Image 1 (cartoon, one colour):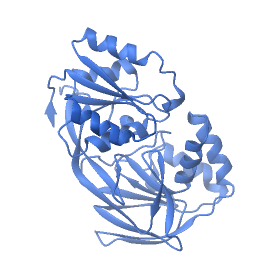
Image 2 (tube, one colour; image 1 turned 135 degrees about the horizontal axis):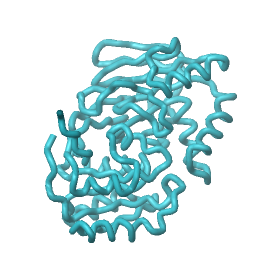
Image 3 (tube, one colour; image 1 turned 90 degrees about the vertical axis):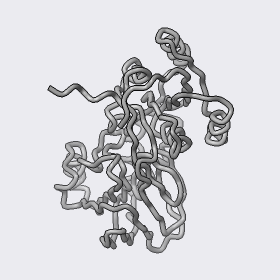
Image 4 (cartoon, one colour; image 1 turned 90 degrees about the horizontal axis):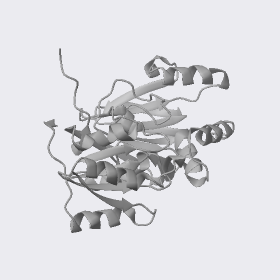
Length: 305
């Protein structure tokens, strides 16, 4: 971990639709904040069309000291995927529906607090995931949540309420798939699963703790399995997920590994979600950790007594 270094030239990547939040004044607010603190702000707006390639081109044309992702986990993943493997640090302004990664990292959830990272920060290297060579900074999964994310992304309404409505509707007819998993540690799993989460972090944006007490910089990730459960057990499972008690459930287990191969029995292609973005994946799926591959601006550690 390195301590605060001067960051003067800053690029802010704005997602205009994340989180169903009005961002009409956001650019002016950030600009005023930067001027007040002696920083230079430039802006890049996502459109959903060739965003990764356009951002890569922007970074080749101009020199920046840091890039801030202004949006939800999907926007953060887009920017992080471009910065991974480089020396350029990622800042996060959490402006999405869930903001799961920023919560795991202890980044302030208010705009003024997050903007303080411009001059008051540490720079920490974090692990990232590759899922069939696709980038993920935080959480990826197969199964029920991937289906809900796909429906959510296709809808016109954002926010936690829309997610809950879709999840409630889809749960009634959902049929779990069968999985076969093997890891570099020799652990295996075979059977039905309601969800299979490949977790570098801890918490979904909904505050569900799928992977308690894990780290984003330990060179490993966890496969978090939720078995099919009867409707009568749903409230109990949900309660355990919201109280960081994942391992206490009869319907959960975790495998820790550096890489894993996941077969979805009877399916050559399967719906997944990576950092809140739906994606069709070809099975078998290979997931692996890329240690310390992303530099991130974090709040400084509190002084020790």
